Image 1 (cartoon, rainbow, N blue to C red):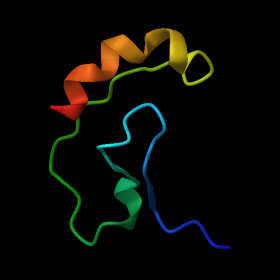
Image 2 (cartoon, rainbow, N blue to C red; image 1 turned 60 degrees about the vertical axis):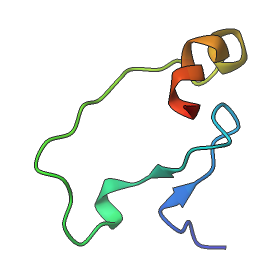
Image 3 (cartoon, rainbow, N blue to C red; image 1 turned 90 degrees about the horizontal axis):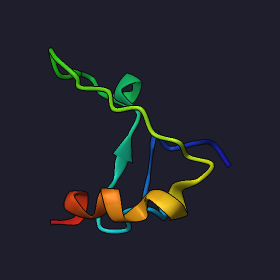
Length: 52
């Protein structure tokens, strides 16, 4: 199966991650936040704001 350019993350099931390279017109400015994807469960509380 080919990667569609987006997915619903387990750490934030109410959100959608989008690969910006898949957009016809990407945003002019992007804020990148480093995240330790290996230990996401220990950091899940810090992600709760993304589901609001």
